[in-house]
Length: 213
Image 1 (cartoon, one colour):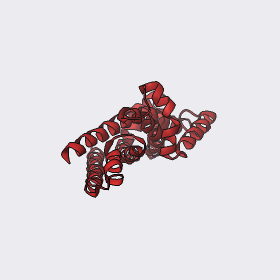
Image 2 (cartoon, helix red, strand yellow):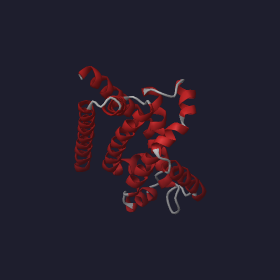
Image 3 (cartoon, helix red, strand yellow):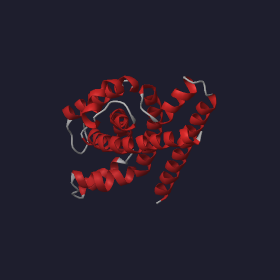
Image 4 (cartoon, helix red, strand yellow):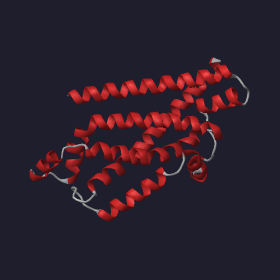
């Protein structure tokens, strides 16, 4: 049991860790651009805002399994293969990036408009407002958003197991479903639940500590 479960846990952690990092690198700038480019904001660009909104909405409308299949050529181009733990990071990152963008947009919009206007009146530039006002003020909400992203990616990684993505989802399907080994299926589900609960606890704790500060 341990010989089967442990490698799958490590594969899941590997996929989720790297896809979280890449999805934040892709989604965070998009979320910032959505906020600062909307009408009446600090860098008003209505056309850019509409284009970004359309792209994000389009990507979010694809079910993950379908998006993963559509991105097989991109995985092949970047990784050199379409199936496996490393190859799955590409569609995981792209699937989560629009979600990250919306989460970041929502978090940054929670910042008090008065703080932003005060910064503008003091002569702050757009980059200064982003890095010294928006992000610090929204940090607790951003942490909760990243926590939610990681939890979603755990779910996505489990679904990726249906088409050879590796990890706990692949283990549950290969042994729990196809070989009728119910014990492995149950253990896989329990581990996923523990991962989700642990990440949620850590995220809530960090956000609460930063919020107090």
